[in-house]
Image (cartoon, rainbow, N blue to C red; front, side, top):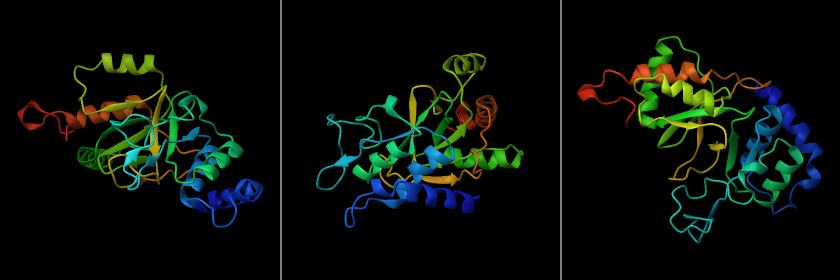
Length: 232
């Protein structure tokens, strides 16, 4: 699969060569390749994150001095600009070579369920032991995101309403949301990586959100003190 993706990427690079910066101005090849793979091989709509600024690159480049996700959110362009057009993707990352890669979730694109990293690692081990098939998993130093098939807000609302309890540590990235993708810098430091890489060149397989939420809620029950195993 990786060989197939590699050949596709090389053909795209050759077609888009005229859009690449001149020697000495080339950007981060890994970010460019990641954005192009998402947009073309998997048809995931992407856009560049706002990135960071300042001498030490710790401040968000957006106007908010107290931004809680520095560098890791849309700003200009806005989320609605997300696209699978390879020429637009090439233009963005040619002009902003260090920009994080953002996936616009929902619609026909993947959605995600995220939870704290330590709890996610335990939950994934448990789900593997139960024989549950999981899709790609995006990991930052603080949180893991389990990618799931697209779902609507109405469908998610019905799913959560039917539950007696849903751990508050779970976050949902659905319609109108976004997710930071590898190999972008993480907002709290470190780097985003694939804990489980997408493996299907024709579009990674994704589980349904109901199956993932059911499994995570089950993995969360029975913690000592009435708490949640997914809370930290």
